[in-house]
Length: 184
Image 1 (cartoon, helix red, strand yellow):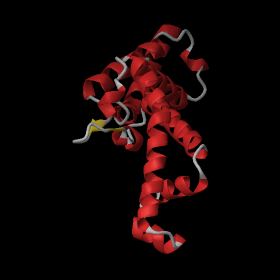
Image 2: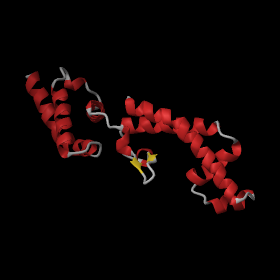
Image 3: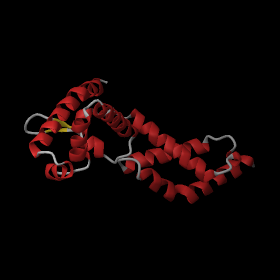
Image 4: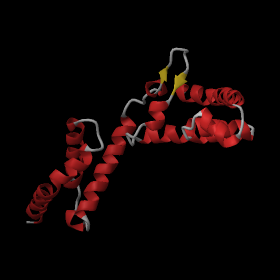
């Protein structure tokens, strides 16, 4: 009798949570097929529970299992190469704009972004104050050289020169990060 009650409980749970849970999963994976696979894993894990009645918060339990399966799926995926996030300009300069601005929420992208920003700010701290300020104002705060010149009273050519020295230092300093990430 307990087995029949347990099966009935599973059927009722599936009817109650299927649509919402699928939507939750689908927003976090790349395809309907992946979402369906994760849903099957969640339902399988639920059906494998020896005492379903012992689960106090069924919705929370289901979403936690789904979230864990999504993360597991990301971990199993072939790691993406760092080059996939960047691009080369006409002069052969490599940029990681797509990586830094990506909003895909994957743990890998978040981790790479965190490492990059940490290294960038450490490298910026190594610069003389006037080079650091010009770089930050121009690149991170999108101020023009004219705006910076108006703000500081410095000659535009001086500001451009300071930024050039900053960029050279940052390229040299971040090159090892780039090589480490590509080879890992």
